[in-house]
Length: 151
Image (cartoon, rainbow, N blue to C red):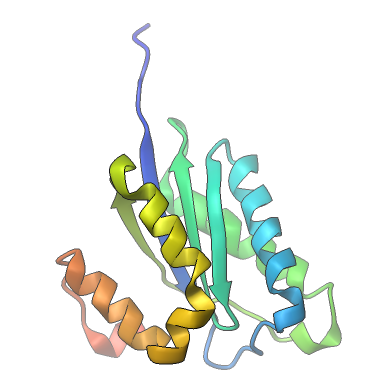
């Protein structure tokens, strides 16, 4: 049997539903760590998980056996269940239905990690919506704005 050799880095972004409570600052780091554990549990390798009160950025290396859609499904489904156990504040917590996933060249993985680490500062100047559209345009992804931010 031929061996599959690959090293595919991804940058995944997803947002809470508009009706969802925001993630409290006190819970952000724990949530990021938990999502990192979920990524690793799929056989993928977490590089960095970060974000702010309304969205997540995850940088990881995709395993040979995993698909992007299944990876994101596992991250969102399990983290949503978990965060609801933290506090009554999260009783109606939910992630949006969609997500964005971008391939990342190994030569700029560290730059993407720095970007994820600087989310708090970054979002003092730019909204999530503007950031998301910027990523879509940077990666030449056609989109219909009516659906991109829909729950």
